Image (cartoon, rainbow, N blue to C red; front, side, top):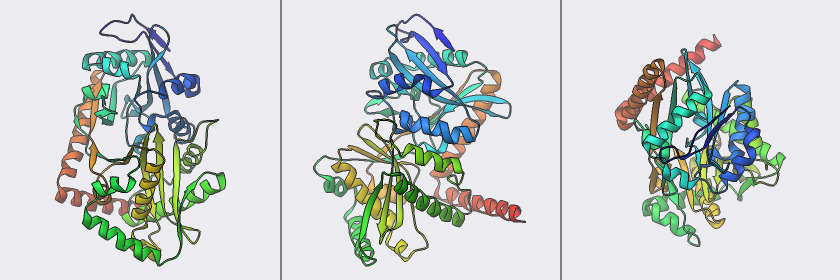
Length: 398
């Protein structure tokens, strides 16, 4: 599927191509990714394994949009999944809840050339090429990336329910980066936890690189996550076998390229007591998920926090300049991080049906944002969610 149009000030692209096979534009993807504005969740090494595992298992419909200039050079890629819900067909960025940041890949000059009017025109043309779309629903979009405005954020309806937390790392001063962000009280608490943790024996921060080690760390991660979600009384998003396949595939190299996904375990006497999953793109490490063994006595020493601090120091020594802990509120995030990525949501209708659906989706996100802004409302919502999920679990067992 392809649409061609004359490049001008209002339309700074020459052609739009849409592919359902990600491999068909792999070369363009790699070429653009090398210097583009892109989060770790739009790296080819993250998207392709997701498409081939979770996407295939769930029957997702993908449309990978490629924009080129008159010299046939790639300007942008929008990795989209087409969703049907209540008779409405809409496009979202690939990754769902497994991706913290939703964005396209943009050549830097092209990104700065896209004002709100050009961005809306671009989406209108993409909608025409794809065909049959009622709306675009883009959530958790960073307002800017690497100091450049995210083009589609200019079309946002409002802030996302949660922000994302991050920490800038200073080369050669890894301890200083943490001293800057963490209070003296937090440092003292962490020191006490380390002293108690040391009493359980020698420990090691392990990165899983070989298939057997990758499998071992994923085993620990999934078991720890399953126990955590069971305790909370909510469904485990990591339970489907396809998610395991995604983690395994994304953590292994594609050809000569380093894997985008990295798996870490904090081991005590060869046993994992905490794990961490993160994605890397350029000089940024993005935390996807963490877990710890709740059934061990070690849990009382906060092994997940110890693992995270050690991992931040390791990535700093390796040249990473930004470490983020992803979207959502948590005490450990505000303890360790001193900056936030502000996120926004866009609901862009293309048809009358899409307009009604976009209004409903916008209202739901606004309600979620309002609940999260109120501690009392958030606590009540969590209690109700737990009751409902426990009730469903009992119904299934009966």
